[in-house]
Length: 609
Image (cartoon, rainbow, N blue to C red; front, top):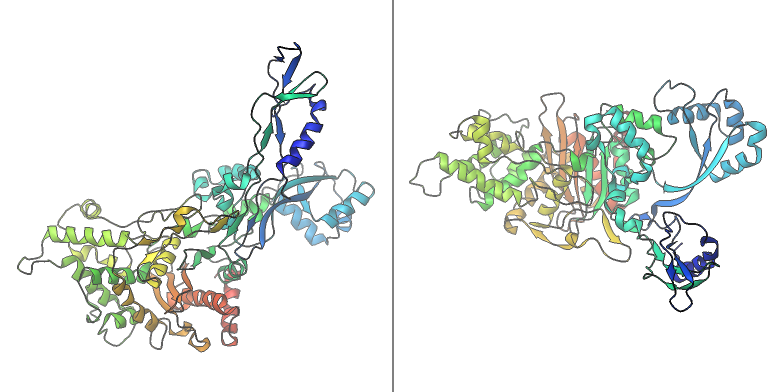
């Protein structure tokens, strides 16, 4: 409830008589002030005008409340056993399995000895039952009531984050379990990033009081109480929950955004977990499992994990090659597997559209070679200087996509990714006379290139917009205002829009018959998807699956990036997840034709494979 300053001032002043004889850190007493006319001494007071419920709420794009400060009921169990768990279950209306599970989740590690303080969250109805019957049924129970941040959804944990003051138990666990990895895992989400705006400001009164507690003016200027502002997210919580079901316990990420605004519609970091886990007093055991899990579910993958993008990066290389006039849309190259292997059997790539449709590795090897080895003056032979200059120019164009730097999303921490420089290769190869053959992996998005999930999704948005973008962001309005000003600044790449338009036919062909992702077409429901698959080589296990795309192709409303670690081919693992999120967002439901497909994906996501 929003409280008026004048109301609180009236209430506060009625209490001043009781404050005259005492002081506190929020109501300091200074040396008495003497009235020169009456010689009566007055005492300076500082009165806080606020209550504990001033923190703003967090809502999704449709104004569903996701996080609020509410009264929370905690049941404190007796430290010393024995505890009659059967009677406790009967008191709360829980079965024996639920009682054991809830207590186990509250213990800091499996097999923790009795004596560890346990507090269980209760519903209001359960709390009422404890008030009525606990002393007779289960003695030595203590019911506590506290105002805490309460989550109304089980989705969007890395987006919502947590209040640092309520996460101290997690910080202690993380420092103990992960030590050096602690700060990599720490992610306060929008709760931490917008903390100052959510918190608001206390108001203060500065009355002069006589010995009877009556006010005689003020000794300093009173300040106005300011309610914490609500955050209205860009996230569609229903779409978010759906996307999380598709990824579940697998390793990877999915980022969906509106290319026209930069608003993030869904932001999944998998394996997923419930946002309340980090701060809930009865989730210590669950937190321990998350911290120890080999798949590192607490790692905020879309923002913090940068990986080679694989073949989806061919889109960027093609755009740059067009800009540098190294190729044209009609350029044809043989599928010469003596240069690099090609995993797809396909017809000759007689144009850029065909090269993208078939994702021909030799085609893009030669695209990049034309770019790196080309010399402006045809009379001059290939030189070391020319290769250095061309790579530097390539990097300049690629960086204009927002790569090799943080995009500036409204989250506490974000990785910049990486693009190699000529100097990097001079040092890595231990010579400045390196050749294209030693860096050709750049042509297929492998080697030294690293992109984050946010950068991958933004890359798709740039192509959808034919060369421009707004920074991806998670908050569409703060209170009654819009997003932060930097999210309203349109940014442009150094590539001409015509060159992005030349990519779209090939991306559409990817989703059509004979394309690498033709099985993921949405043509049956009238949606034309433009996409690009990627299979990222992995020396330490199964390959990673990637996909970027947008829909509808000619009037994009959603751009999606998916990356699934150790999942194999992008066409069979990543593309289906992406197009289902597109279909869910654009149509509101999945066509019957894909229901079995959807069920199979969700089943695999639940098992983590």
